[in-house]
Amino acid sequence: MYKNLSARDMLHLTRNLNRRFDQQYAEGRLGELGIPLKRRAGKLSGGQQAQLALTLALARRPRLLVLDEPMAMLDPIARHDFMASVMMAMAADGVSVVLSSHVLAELERVADYLILMSRGRVQLAGDVDDLLASHCLLTGPAAEADRYAERLSVVHTSRGGAQAHLLVRATADEPVPPGWEAHPVGLEELALAYLREPTTVLPGPDRARRRPLRSENGERTEAAK
Amino acid sequence: MTALSVPARPEDDVSLRPVPWQRMGWVTWRQHRATLAWVIVFLGVLAVLLGLAGRQLYSAHAAALAACQSASSPACPGAIIAFNGTNGFLANGFMLQAIPPLIGAFAGAPLLARELETGTFRYAWTQGFGPWRWALAKLVPLAVLLATAAGVFSLLLNWYYQPYFALGNQRLTLEETTPFFPGIFDLRGIGLAAWTLAAFSIGALAGMLIRRVVPAIVATLVAYAALAFAAGGFLRQHYLTPLVTSNLNLPGSAWIISQWWTKGGKFAFSGWPPDRLLQQFCPNGPSGPVGPFGKSKPVAIAECLTPHGYTQWTAYQPASRFWAFQWIEGGWLLVLSATAIALTVWLVRRRAT
Image (cartoon, rainbow over all chains, first blue to last red; front, side, top):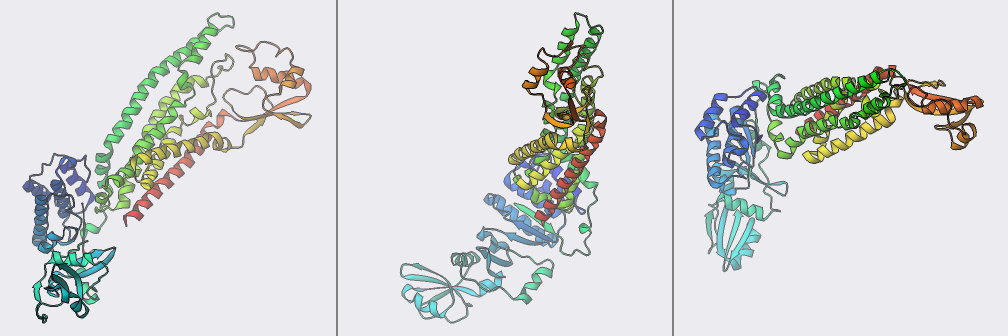
């Protein structure tokens, strides 16, 4: 965005540069957010700038919105508000969103589909629910950890004293060895475990499963970098 | 952050039909009106100063012509010195050579470099208008406007330099300049507009290639200086084949490319006669008065040598070729500018996709 232009000028600019631009929606949205139209974009706070950019993008009535690190420069409250705006747009207007982010904690709340990239390669890709269902966290004696590591497909092992935590690829109803406990895993834990082991690659869904992502309108998609 | 939006179904999407060109008019105006205002203010201030300086020059010229109506007038030498000394810093035009590169560097170079440096290109190039059309719709109108401003300004320069081309200046040893003089040729006619256009285009291209404002400005100044130096020092004299004459009394408006001497049909030496010959044939210096109302020194020297079989040859461009030279130079500068702008637009297109 041009820092020396006012919010109103940015709206005018974007309206001139696009065939479709919902001026009423944009002005209404900025009004709701309390962003003064006369203020220069450079004088707005980081959160307001992000909201202005989002408003400009949404006023074009897109079907797919690509957000590259939208939360990188925002404080926690602005981050929360911004994501709420994005989710509202997804719900109200049926916009699909591809979002890249380092903020793993935010993802569980918003993401339907996760693509985890590390060192320029896709490490993990899949429906969030499927991913969570196909992994679990095993806790048991550290001495036995290596033995199980050979039999189970372990993504990441962490040891704390006598206890070891194995993040394994297995459904929750698979039998657990005696002396071990299985817990469901959270998206943040899962992503962290994979990112700590950048050589572990879970083959992504095959073509048949990937196709709907491109053509199915309205499906929410999330990518985490 | 960046947000970009992509319509999913191109075939039924109205927003994928090109946005009309005229919509960019407001955008270009809104984003560059400050630059244009600065250029107008800069040229306007210069115009006022030149207007005042021009009045001084014109009145000094008129005073010299009036004072020197008779050779014996005691006021004549003083009036000649006064005219020749008026606005000496402008007489050779070199200071005004800075106009095109300044406009090019400060209006052309930041145009794309600032977008790339501050990241605003991510916004500009993801709008429905399309990146290459956006670049073209900015570059062409701005280039035309700036060249027009420079063209209007050069009318004033045309007027300012008139006294130096007046007939009779040579006879009175008033300062006389050929219209081809390197510092003045490209300020008059279409020269200033063409060079401003070239400077702007070079600036835009440099900005796109370098992607940083300050380095792009420096590169524009350097590239422009090199081009202007090459054109004035080497290219311009070859636009048309020079005329060759053995006439000693060339008008002061002729642009002398080279001079050489022959004796008995064979080449003797080039340029100024060696001292040995001058001592032999002109031991007492030239005959007759030299200076106002007399001969110029080169003519007097030549007249010393011609009785001894020497002939002086001069290759020159006559002042009547001024407009031909202007159009040749304007032509290749226009081609150069169009190429630079096309290349810039192509680079935007390549980088944006």
